[in-house]
Each structure stands twice: as C-alpha cells, then as structure tokens.
Amino acid sequence: MVLPFKHEPFTDFTVESNISEFKSALEKVQGELGQEYPLIINGEKIYTDDKLSSYNPADKSQLIGKVSKATKEHVDQAMDSALEAFKTWSSWTAAERADVLYKAAAIVRRRKHEFSAWLVYDAGKPWNQADGDTAEGIDFMEYYARQMVELEKGKEINDRANEQNTYFYQAMGPGVTIPPWNFAFAIVAGTTVGPIVAGNPVLLKPSENTPVIAYKLAEVLEEAGLPKGVLNFVPGDPAEIGDYLVDHKDTHFINFTGSRATGTRIMERAAKVQEGQTFLKRVVAEMGGKDTIIVDKDADLDLAADSIVNSAFGFSGQKCSACSRAVIHEDVYDEVLEKSIALTEKLIRVGNPADKNVYMGAVVNQKQFDKIKEYIEIGKNEGQLAFGGETDDAKGYFVHPTIFKDVDPEARIMQEEIFGPVVGFAKASNFDELLEIANNTEYGLTGAVISNNRSHLNKARYSFNVGNLYFNRGCTAAIVGYHPFGGFKMSGTDSKAGGPDYLQHFLEAKMVSETF
Ligand code: NAD
Image (cartoon, rainbow, N blue to C red; front, side, top):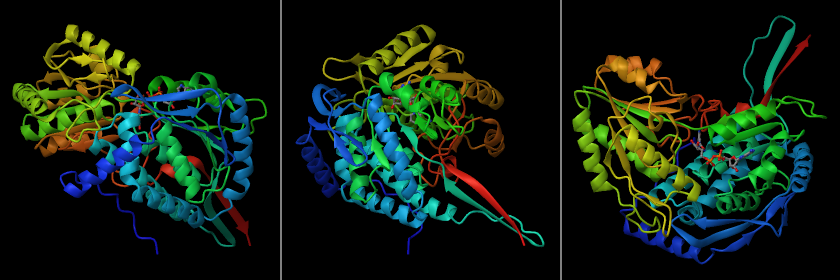
C-alpha cells in the first residue's frame, strides 16, 4: 500500500550527527569535482568535445564539472528517441510509472546530503537552503506519482438513459523541460518528472549554470528503472539549441521556469505552427517575481522583521518568491525598519556556503553579480541606503544584504526583478494604500501580509493579486502538496507546481460516449 503524501523533513543542523554526515558528503563531493559528463540520448551516453563548464560561485577558480553540449542534431536524435519511447511509456499504467518515481525518491533520500553537497558547490547554496532544495525534489517525485495514480481514474461525468459517458486523461507526446538554476535540483526534478509520470517522454535542457546536479538526477532516474528514451538529457548553449527545442515540430509542450524575458519569448515562438506540426503546443511558463511583504499597523513587528529579512536574504534573494519590497504602515515603519536592520546585522553571515554557519553564499555568476551591483547603484539614487551595499567579486560573487529605505513605490528597484539580496522599504498611510502599492508591479507571484486585523486579512485574501499569498509569515518556502506554487500576471501561467492541478498541463482529457 502506498502511504499518503508527507513532505520530506528538513535536516536539523543543530544535531551533531547531521553536521558530521553533511561534512562527509561535502568531502565526498569535493573529491568528485571537475569530472566530465555526457549527454544522454536514448539511454546512450554521448561525450562531445564542446562542453559547458560549471564553476563554484563562491570560488570562481573551482571547476565543478564539464558537461557535454548538445547540438541541433542531438536534439533531433533525442526527439526521435522520445517519440519511440512514447509508444511504450504512455501505455504503462500510472502505478507502474509511479513506482519509478518512488524508487528515484528513495535513492535520493538515501543520498540526500550528497545531493545537497552538490548544490552547495554547483549553485552556491548554504546548507539549509541546499537541504530544502533536495527535500523539495524528493517531494515532487512522491507527490506527482500519487497524483497521477489518482488522475488515471478519470473524473465522474453524467450518464443519461441509454447513454454511458466516461472521462479520462491520456499522455500528450514528447516535450521539453527548461528549468532555471536557482532550484537546481527541486525545479529540475519537478518539471521533469511531472510530465514523465503523466506518460510523456522529456528532453531536459538544464540551465547552463547548474548542469551537473541535473545530470545527477538523470542518473538517478535511470537507476530507478526509467526506460531509455523517456528522459533525454540535452544540456547546451541556449543561444544554439533553445529556440530549436521550442520550435521543433514534435515538441508537444514546453515546461519552462525562468525569467520573464525567456518565458515570453518561448510563449511567442511556441504559438507558431511549424511545418509538419499536427497539434498546438502547450506552454507552461513560470517566470519572475517582485514580491511584497505588507506590514499593517496592528501587527507583530518582530514577526514582520523576521519575515522580511529571511524572505529577502534567504539564498541571497535568488528566489522568484524573494521579498524585494517591504511596504509598511507609516505608524510602524521606523520600528520595523530598525528591527529589520538589527536582525540582518545579527543573523546574516556572508561567506563560503560550504562553511556551516554561513547564511548567504555568493550569487550565481558574474552576470548576476554585475546586475545586482548596478541595481544597488540605482537604488542609491532612488532611496536611502539604510544597510549594506557592499560587493566583492575577488574570489567569488559576494553581495552583502542590502536595505534601501524611503523608496518611491514606482522606482525601478521597486518594480524590476533584481534577483539578489536587495530589499526596498516604502510606507503608506492606510491598508488600502498598502495593498495598492503591493499590486502596482507587473508581477503577481508571492506576497505576505503581517497583520492582526482580521478584516484587513479578509480584504487581502481577494485583493492582493498574487498566486501565493501568505498571512503572518514570510513569502518564500512553499512546500509541495501544501502550498501549490505559481504566479499571476507576468509571473506566468500559474501552473501551480506541487499542486493537484499541475499534471493536467501535460495530459489530454478525453470523453467517450456510447449509446446503448
Ligand atoms: P533564464 O530565463 O535566464 O533561464 C531559464 C532557462 O531558460 C535556462 O535553462 C536557460 O538556459 C533557458 N533559456 C535561455 N534562453 C532560452 C531560449 N531562447 N530558448 C529556450 N531556453 C532558453 O532564467 P534563470 O536566470 O535561469 O532563472 C532566474 C529566473 O527564473 C528569475 O526570473 C526567477 O524569478 C525565475 N524563477 C521563477 C520561478 C517560478 O516558479 N515562477 C521559479 C524559479 C525561478
């Protein structure tokens, strides 16, 4: 019997045995850095001369691994193998497909710290963030497996006299998964195994920033018994194969998570029917955020500071859900700002994330470092620098937690996604105005309200226009099966990853009616 879904517990890093196990995992992975990895097409490992090199964000000179680069010809081969694999994989029962995911989850669970250690080196994640990323990946496998078994039963519709009607779901065909680097295990795993357990082979093109941990996932799925051709691993230069994957006439869906610019490009291109294409492509595009925490006049101000600081600076603000705007009632503005600065000073240690007590590691790469630095300069003209602002890219890409106060809600640092540890504070004189500011960006991903006023919470429930709204907590850390995740407006297609509707994006619903 399959037990009901329960999310993977986080590791308690105050426990000595957990600390030493994690350190051993870091040592193990350190001994494996610098290796070369192949493409996987139809189960075959293919090494190419041209490679993507992945470096440690906290130590630019440390090579994490070199991953083979797929060309357009490789994409064609991968698509052919996916089309062939579709014939058999889609005929497996949901329970049979689910077993592959349960086994993959079990393999990762047994090697959990090892996966997290790869995230420390490859993505620059501090221990707890890496641990959360791995746990979420396990959750996606466990959750989607169970969801598919349920969905296979179909849904009830009505019969009439002399007529029987059935309604059920079937797989669509091969598609493409294009994840970002910031949840280099969890999002890669979730966006890959979701369509797969629904019966669709996938071509996975991981982010060029974190291809090694994505390869590790492909290895696990193979070990768990996924038939060849069901997952084809085709990392590469997005400029070379990105459009090609999206445009391919046999790509049935594109499961994308990443920036607004790439997502909208994919949406546009996928709309064009290619020669020989006999269906419309589906696009799931989960994109950026500009997420706000509102602090009401009647609120727990320590909770407010804690929520702002942890949501703004966890993983250096490199989360689509990160709080980059704190919008605060004028009566409590100064106090919340003061508490947030004091907490940041006390809590946040910036350094190499391989060290246990580091809260914030380096940001992912030079491009991201330069972009954040530029926004910090912009912020100095748009508001007052209240805390931080230092950057240092001598060894790795380090940006310190940065707080701007008294920022105009229309300012660029309050409107554009920075994707770094930078938060702007703004004030308003009543709750309606707080809400109005919270809603004034083109994004609508996450938000939080810190308030003890029930009627204000009721109002926010329907008027705070975001896909994931949290009351009296931070706006990050969605858990699979508990907080289905996806945004409104230019944050994307609201696919609700880790939720009960997610797999339907990769399924076709069919009705059969028989007259007796
Ligand atoms: P990105 O858009 O630069 O890249 C995302 C993926 O798209 C990568 O795999 C990249 O190689 C690929 N890509 C780039 N150009 C392409 C093209 N022309 N065709 C096809 N694929 C292409 O984003 P990123 O920097 O990797 O990730 C950060 C962004 O992701 C942020 O905006 C963040 O908010 C967003 N994000 C959103 C969610 C969510 O659930 N809404 C979750 C995590 C991250």
